[in-house]
Length: 252
Image (cartoon, rainbow, N blue to C red; front, side):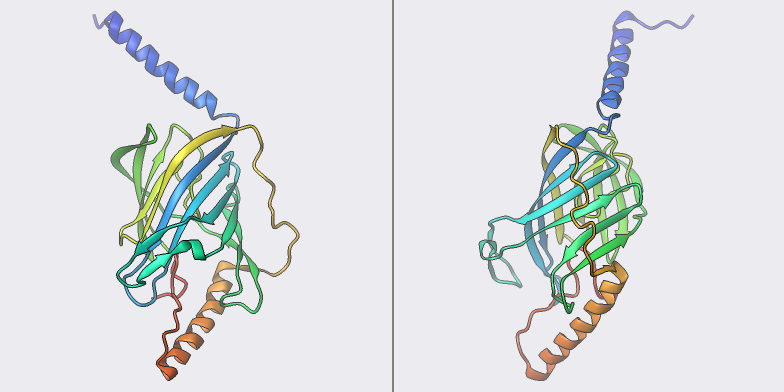
């Protein structure tokens, strides 16, 4: 007759209790604050870009705000040369409605007649892989996708069952703690996770005008890009204009 040794029974019971308490801990939509370090350094050709950000995701698994601020970085790059990011002043917030699969964020004037809000509805088609790693002590599983011009791999943890993550990366059965593009341009990694008593802020852009879709923004940006690159060709100038950031704005 099959029997379980007492030591094995205790191990199984402990494992079940751990899973139970993890699920209970994150079943009440409590608010988490996740701090990320983010580097975008795209030197593949003349139309890449760079940014060095600290990101803060405040999420309860239903809605979230991802806020980014430039961090002081000094680096000597192959294409862009010497970069001192302390000279740049920029911050932005991405408000996500995870149930509607929608994100709303502010876009500066570049490529636009005036600053606008972008309302972006999207779904990322993830492929979950049988590969694991540890991030901040959490067991994370690998997933891959193709999203708006780049191939990405992400590591998410089902120990925190929020289908959220940094920037627009979400839609997995667990919080995304690390993302990188396979071309080496983007790297985002969580560096701290804390519970906070405050709820996720309401949509900071609610009621503001001049809202466009991401696809409409791409059309406007393409006109701007063609105008600037044409001007550059005529004058043989050193005007810098990217065709992509994390996402490609000009389809290849």
